[in-house]
Amino acid sequence: MGSRLRRDRPLQNPIVRAPPRRAREFRCAARERGRTHVDTKKTGLVSSPALSPSYLPRDPRMPFSGKVVIVTGGSGSIGRATAALFAQRGARVLIADLADSGLQVAEELTAQGHDVVFRHADVSAEGDVAACVREALDRWQRLDVIVPNAGIGGRGAADELELQDWQRVLDVNLTSVFLCIKHSVPVMRQSRGGAIVITGSVMGLVAPFHALAYATTKGAIVNLTRAAAIDHAADNIRVNAVCPGHLESPTSIGGSAARAVDQRGLIERYPLRRLGRPQDVAHAIAFLASEEASFITGTSLVVDGGYSAQ
Ligand SMILES: NC(=O)c1ccc[n+]([C@@H]2O[C@H](COP(=O)([O-])OP(=O)(O)OC[C@H]3O[C@@H](n4cnc5c(N)ncnc54)[C@H](O)[C@@H]3O)[C@@H](O)[C@H]2O)c1
Image (tube, rainbow, N blue to C red; front, side):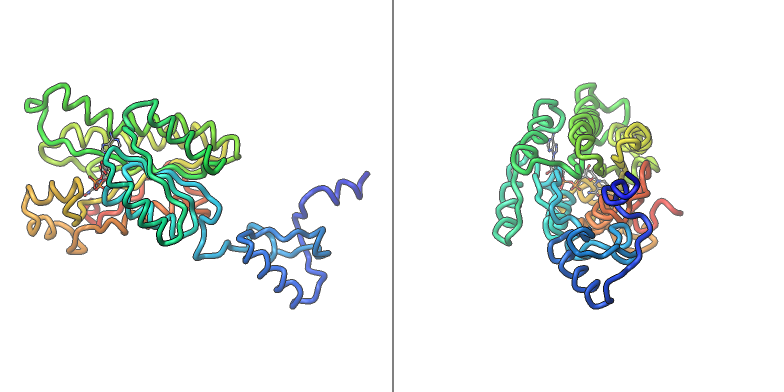
């Protein structure tokens, strides 16, 4: 009975019995297969700390190999850069957006040999969000990461905003995040884990002038991230956010805001003396979604060149 138990259970405190060269060969073979686990039954190795899955890194160039990622707002500047980065790092990606230019993004990435699809969706509509998750499942049978990133700007103080404009910003920037979490959690729970990385904004940490609805949604995302993180931690689903500062991209929400308040004056307010690039945000999102961030949940990572540190 005792020996049967030992054979069936993964070994916790492994020791290498094979010569070092053999161990190295098995390690390389496992890496090539995109896995870090070495089958100790097949190899005859008793295993070692160096061979244990928790010690052996995945191929650093392909950390998302075999993973499935949904990026909402993937037709826009941050979403496009994020979808491309996940795809380049081995993930299969579903881009969801109201703007059909995301189809071109998907086609370009597919032409480069990546597995990327586009789905037209309004993320403020529950049926559309549910359909995105279903499509990822139908295609790839799993969902590992979702990036609720779609958003709209919303200028105006309280006395300048119509109720319907206020409501639309809340629907697109905040309710959509709730819907993404609601529909991805049951799927992630089944596969014993996942990562949700929400695009917030530095305007959720400090208040901008005349952007009440936008600032409200981005402020809410910071605490929504904490609350969802503790709700789903037991299922090994991590929930984090990024809070970008203004981006230099001319198509982006912040870019148009920056033009409105004089771009040069704005850059002076950034200690790093530049505005953000979509890739700056994409890298932060990919980090939070990765195994390297496996002990990080409930946090909002500021990506703002020092803007909010002053
Ligand atoms: N650009 C910035 O300076 C900046 C700064 C901080 C935070 N952000 C946040 O980053 C996220 C991405 O913004 P971006 O800079 O890439 O802007 P963007 O305008 O380039 O991209 C936003 C995308 O969201 C899509 N979208 C809007 N409403 C949608 C809906 N109802 N359903 C589906 N898709 C919808 C748009 O079509 C667009 O492709 C947003 O949440 C934004 O608030 C941007």
